[in-house]
Every structure is written in structure tokens, then in C-alpha cells.
Amino acid sequence: MLHLIMLMLLAFAALTASADDDTTNRDFIEKGRYLFQAANCYACHTDVDSDGAPLAGGRALKTEFGIFYSPNITPDKATGIGNWRDDEFIKALTQGIAPDGRHYYPSFPYLSYRSMDTADILAIKAYLFSQPAVKQQNQPHQLEWYLSQFTLRIWKALNDLIATPVTFDGSRGSYLVDVLGHCNECHTPRNVLGMLSMQDKLKGNEDLSAPDISSSTNGIGDWQEQELADLFRYGELPDGDYVADHMGEVVDNSTSKWLDEDLEAAIEYLLAK
Image (cartoon, rainbow, N blue to C red):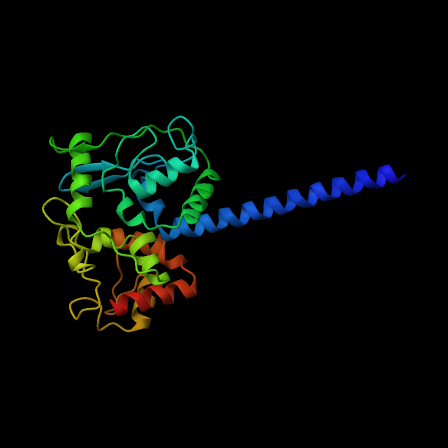
């Protein structure tokens, strides 16, 4: 009888531990989902114009340097990231280097993701690996003749040497704006070499039709907190118009899903810059 009781207790303990593990894993994936939305990964990695499968890549990103096509980040083992280890995923996001050693062009905002917390990176990976795998080959970029892996490595070395890095002051607002949201990638101008001119942080990029969102009078310095909240929640501008195109996607896929405390932190940070 005692032996039977012990077996029952052991079985109960195993079931309880398994349930706890499942809960922890679900919570970690849910955290990853929120961070994934804050980083607006869906918009770039889904070819919405062609009704592409979610996160299967193929979206065309047109720039003065040519057309970049986003890669497949579903957990498909053949064409996606299904075989990636944790350290490989971290290296890709923070250094712009693929598991096979190829370097990513800065159209992928690894320069902003450098300051991303490692636990947050792994949570995003857990979320991505919980999504459906889609078998779809990556489409090669269509770039100017002088852009290659060789020149890209030179560019990255020069960027690290002479460019001011994307700043992160340790606050939640900066983490949302500068790191996860990578707002500098569009709203900070670039020099002739395509490097971010951080001395003009968030002062707009005419090439991308991205407006000045610094706290200067030319930017959002005269905006009220509620006006910024309406922009991030609903895409509504102070004049009653609504944002469209890329910023519309940012609102739909990212800022409209922020928690209230994150919305407040981002607004406080932007108005103080």
C-alpha cells in the first residue's frame, strides 16, 4: 500500500512540474509576442502587398541602394530559421551576422537591436518558433553593382569606427523608441554612406519622407501628450488627419498594442528629447 501511495505522489509531482513548465513556457512565448509586436517584425517580414504568408519574407524594401527583400523568419527548417540556435539568433539580431557567416545589410535594424536585452531576444525567438512553419525560399536582393558582401564588411567596419552609435539611455521609453521600435532607422537622417547621423537624432529623413519627431519646435515639441497618445493608439494626427503607408503599419502592428505604461514611457521620452 505504501509503495502505491509513493508512486501516486511521484506521478502527481511529475504532472505538477509539467504543468508549471507549460505555464512558464506559455508566459515566455506571450512575452515574446509582445516584444515581437513592439519591434514591428510582422510588417517587414510579411509580403502583405502580395498576400504573402505571415513572416515568410519576400517584402520589397525599396531604397536608393536598390531593393532589399526581407527573409523568411518562420520556423521552417529548410527555408526559415528553424535550425537556428539561441546564440545564432542573438548574433543575427545584435551583430547582423547570419549563422552561415553572411553579413546582413543595415536595412535590417541590428544597429538598433544591439542594445536589446538577451532575455527579450530569446523570448522573441520562442514566439517565432511557436508560429506555423512556411516553406518559402528567400528572394535575393536587387542592389547597385558596388554593393556586395565584401563592401558590406568594409561599411560595417567604417560605421563602427566613425559613426555615432544608436543611443540607449537605459529608460523604458528609450528602449521602446531607440531599441525595439528602432525609430531612428527611419526618422534620423543618414549621410552619403548610408550611416545614421545621430547628431541629428530623430530630426527626420527626407529620403524616406519620415518627419522630424524630435522635441524641437520643428518636430513634436508643441504636441500635447494626448495628441501623441492618439497618434500611437489610433494613428490620428493633431489636425484630424491619419497616418498612412509605413507609419500606418507601425500603428496597426506595434504602437496600438503597447501597454498603457509603455505608451506613457515612450511619450515622456520623446517629449524630453
